[in-house]
Image (tube, rainbow, N blue to C red; front, side, top):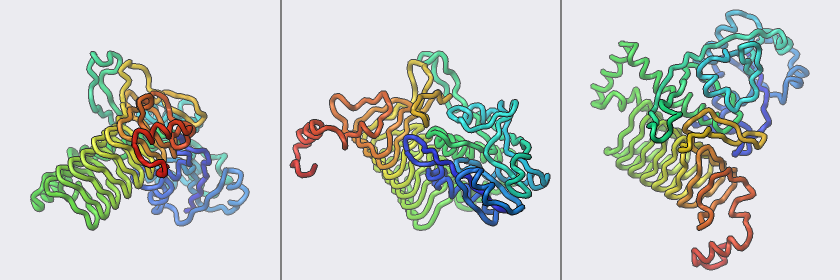
Length: 427
């Protein structure tokens, strides 16, 4: 089968690059798609739009056509392809509008679904005789099979309108990535969190698999969630004996994990250093990252070559590549006034996220000094440098490139020079 890719040129704020180049599950999105479709497609071609595909794809061959800003897991794509091939007719991926995981987490901030009655049509087609059949494609509905999973309760004295906070975690994941929040959903909610929930369901329902885990734990003399079936470890990995690693967790090559570290249901890339006392839960740490002592991540994504300094806690955040976040910086994640959390969209407007708890997002190549406080759902654009000063350390609005201290007026540099008491030549 031939795989035809339609490129999405619009950029995702605050990263300022297309979705295909952003990391999900510690892979660029384009590579994630290629790896999942390798067993279905023997060749691939890429076009700017449908018109170019119609002009150049004249052969009547079996095709899978999709946009390059889609995140999906193996369960979804395998069902779609297998059902489509069995029917041998042109079809288009569709979801019911009231599918809990789609309506709760995917529809907000998304503008590219095509609505047909109570169905939402996605940009993915199976065409048994080429692109000329695209107009004939009928909807093929896929049920994401979500499970409602709670993660904590907000006490009434904090917010009377919130109560129990739950996620709709799908077995068959699909996200149209048009906003940084969709990276959070794909990486964390529909990635590590969903994977852990359905692994637990498998343990509870399949006694053969449960017996396998028990025998592996006895053989290795480890807890069930720490054995080699639950924790995958790469080559040349150093884990201190006092560290705790609970699965399902995947650790890459050349990783160092220090004393007292706790890792619970995470993806850790290669060439990563996690120093003493760090705590990581439901997070993705990409290749080349460095976490000094007592850094904490909860439901957070770090893209490659990023450093989060000591005593910093990131909750429900997304951080781009080659970024530094200084010690003691705080990303708040809850509006104590109970108002809706809104974030920046492609057009520069603010839209509701449909999430009661959400941290912030930092773009690529940023440098944030120590001691900053950034409000929920705020973004820091790529290439921004922020220096904490007496009048500039709490940020209630999105931070744009033009506000970077690196490009600020000379009087701000004078303040920093005086504060550091260093030779002016360093500037």
